Image (cartoon, rainbow, N blue to C red):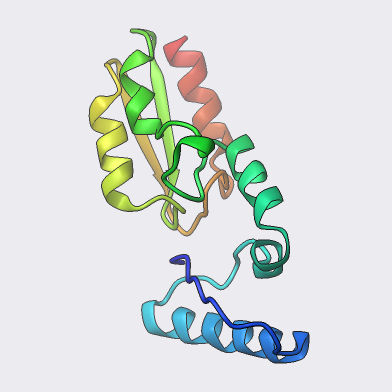
Length: 138
């Protein structure tokens, strides 16, 4: 699901904001056919600094700014020549162009696995396949 940012002037009640979030989420799900699961929107609205810190722990950036660290694509070339399995969800948070740039910059040997119907860090039952890759490659 894409990230939808809505800025509002102060003064609306929490109930009004929650209704708007539900309606926007429903419209996006129906428009592009993605699953409705996504991190709690309230976290972004109520705790933006904590949200950015949590994303950094996952290796993601909320904004392209120096305080959020370098892009994964910017540091991909620093990975050594050991075997790498690059696992992505079909519904990744990062834009496809950034993922493609990251994959392109990672030095071989590398394999890519895209997990259908998954968000970032969701394996959807593919753990055995990944375990086999580790046994075969390392």
